[in-house]
Amino acid sequence: MIKAPLVLAVLLCGSLVSSAKDYLVHTFKRQQLTDKFWSEGATFGDLNRDGKPDIISGPYWYEGPGFTKRHEYYPATATFQLKKDDGSEETIAGFEGALGVNNKYSDNFFAFVHDFNQDGWNDILIIGFPGQETAWYQNPKGASGHWTRHVVFKATDNESPTFTDITGDGKPELVCATGGRYGFAEPDWSDPTKPWPFRAITPNRKYQRFTHGLGVGDVNGDGRLDLLEKDGWWEQPESLAGDPVWKFHEFAFNANSHGGAQMYAYDVNGDGLNDIITSFAAHGFGLVWYEQVRSGSNITFKQHEIMPIEQKRIPNQYGVCFCELHAIDLVDMDNDGLLDIVTGKRYWSHGRTGDPDRNSPAVLYWFKLVRGPGHTAEFIPYLIDDDSGVGTQIVAKPVSNPHYPDVVVGNKKGTFYLRHEARKVNQTEWEAAQPKPVGGQ
Image (cartoon, rainbow, N blue to C red; front, side, top):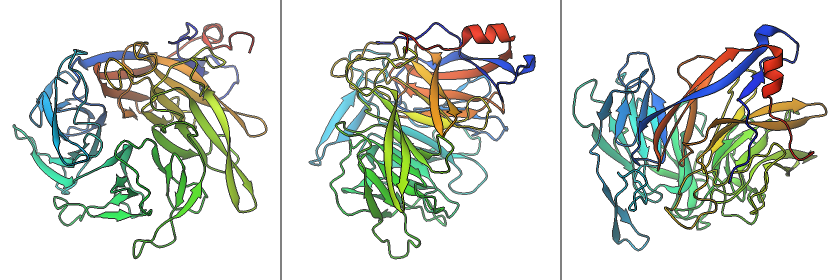
């Protein structure tokens, strides 16, 4: 179910000072690269060294800027072997179909681009089905054929792992759970093809493959990145020598839910303290930010609903309501210096049955951050598209325009590129198209 005002995605750039050149209408042009379900994520990256970002989704990469020429970098197959917790295997079939009866799961959940062997050509990192292998594919430097696959981590748990520099050494790590513990897998950069050893930062709390909600960010402002999870945050110590257990600060970011998606630490209201942004339930309702509140050295959080967390399909003050926000990106969409939320509905997370509002439109939205007086803040929703949705990963990045990020998603509906376009309008057009509260709120 979705309720939304029939408006264009528009805003006033910079400030509210009246000036014709300041009024911009932001729209998005959808390009469907495929209608086949190959992956739950997609990303951008320059793979052929032409200076133009390409799109990576499933077993294919698409040459930018047109994204019409496709290359297969690993065998496109309709089945994969799922290893169960008891070590047995189950064959999952049929995910090449476009929403067919066999559409179930993919073996490709997240894609990242990095030059692992430092040869000047970007490679592709693929995180598979939760609990399965993570591998990177070596760029053949323009040669045809499939890319060499290097399996570097055997079991990547959690449904929102990431590839980022959590240690602050200038090199990225695979941040995830495995064996019941949170931590990170760090490549040996002298030979990144070797298995990446895991450095646990928590005791064994029995985190399992389908645990939801994970992020990396500096919560306490000490300049070190902490690990965020649905039950609290783990404070990075001054030194990582000897692989110490990080200090746990308990807080129920997703109380009474199984957890959300990606989590972010960001100063939402401009008070100098980093707050927490997350979806409330990856397979339910709710988009929230948690305002950091301090009393001396004690840190706690106050919940603010961007979309209600109630499982009753209640729209927010702008009439917007959708569920299953299983992927979130945080990026400055309108070039105003503040980070905005980009998210949407994951369509058919578990196939045809089992999820709330599973057949509602697969919407994509961005939520513009607007700061108010007295360290208040609001996120205003703007519709990007109503027939693409998200998977477990959504990436927004400047591609066609250096000032305004485009969006790419891969999911059960296929792969979609949303090209961000901005045009000047007059003040009357801008005011007429602004989202307005509904129902007297």
